[in-house]
Length: 425
Image 1 (spheres, one colour):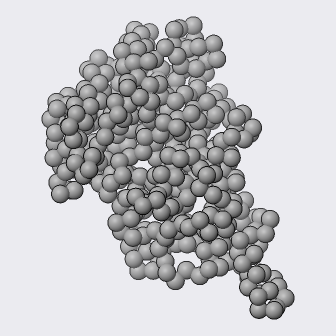
Image 2 (cartoon, rainbow, N blue to C red; image 1 turned 90 degrees about the horizontal axis):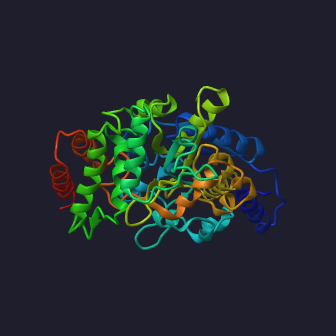
Image 3 (cartoon, rainbow, N blue to C red; image 1 turned 60 degrees about the horizontal axis):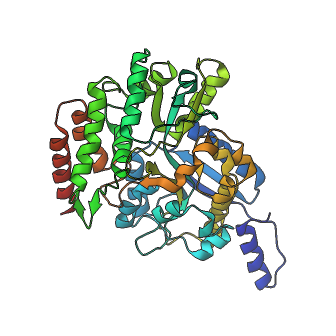
């Protein structure tokens, strides 16, 4: 297929009455923050793209995840030294809009990439858009937390159906009953997740909070009205599980994964990005039990699961040439068409044609938990929220200590409200 860049160059030559010469090669400078299995898969995609294209070559650079990455993006774009394309967390979009670091994606841009907004899940397009509806990035995936579980341990119990999926968990009481049963069966930490703070605790808290239809921000106010009670309830739930020994004490991220793979937890709530970890252990014969993953059950008022998206963004560079922009859009379109390979990292592609394909239906457990795309609860749309934000700091400093008994849930929620509100006022 002729690339957008090649079409543009050919059209320019024809308009000038010239024959079309051999296309000059465009180098696209690419930045991402992808490590581990994500990084391996993305590098493979870049290598495949480069092998297929003579006229465009991606020069990829992987930078440190989190605040260092976004600081470098902000400073580099400000002085006109940013990349041509970069990966971006959509939870960071509100801050990106304030900083002015992104170039809007027009309908014409999408057409050049061979895409349309209708190709993507509604939740991801909404997360990628400014308040006025302007598209600011192109979603690549929806990555959320899921319930990884020990099928072998649950075999023959009331919590596993005939297809091997979790069942019978329709309330917090149902899940607590399962965890207590697992404790009695010898699982030292029945439900593992990153309990020391950080992303793991935020994702658990926010899932429970949003399942109550909780809103962290309402018209610029933090935890307005009964949202304070919903936050307290979410923290209290986690604190109660900790006091019963149903979740681990201050488990670091790696330790929480090891608790599950080592057979000490029957459930592990973590991101879809750990799916390859458990698949690899299964293939190597080191896991020791049959494993699977489902969407986190609805236990409260509505289905909701913490989620974010990796997206492709174009820096706000007024000096970018038309040829380079066309090449960047060709890269974005190609990546979407090859997003089944990215799904191997556990992510749900944001590109619906991939998720609706027969090939994706055979990809397990991904196809089973793809339903969560309709229940994705993205971080609040605010400059204080998203990856490496003040909200994450509040989790580390307030919610995690409350889960472990150092603060009451009421104290933690009130202090979080006060600290975050001060950043908005």
